[in-house]
Length: 119
Image: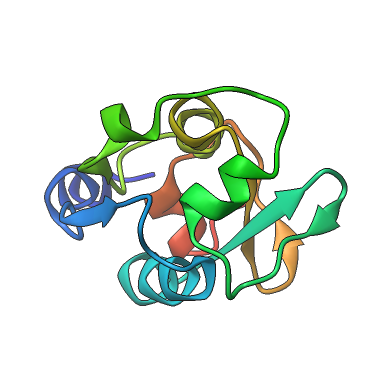
């Protein structure tokens, strides 16, 4: 990854905000618009219903989290994929995977690298 790409990832698309009141399909669409990669939500091992909100999906899981504390959670292109996925688990109690072109993105690369297909 070039220095220019790394700097750009720190500033580009830095305004992607995750809110527990948004529907999963809306969050996925916004994530794809922002980063050019797909955000897939899971309930257990099955893909979650896109009509649910993050809060509703959280209510269906056994993990107890305070979704009010997660309002305004921001995802940046400079974040590692694994760190972003972990934030969803910690703040909303849900499992997410980031995909690009139908393939799971490795946790060790940044979201910006994933958006450019650098994996």
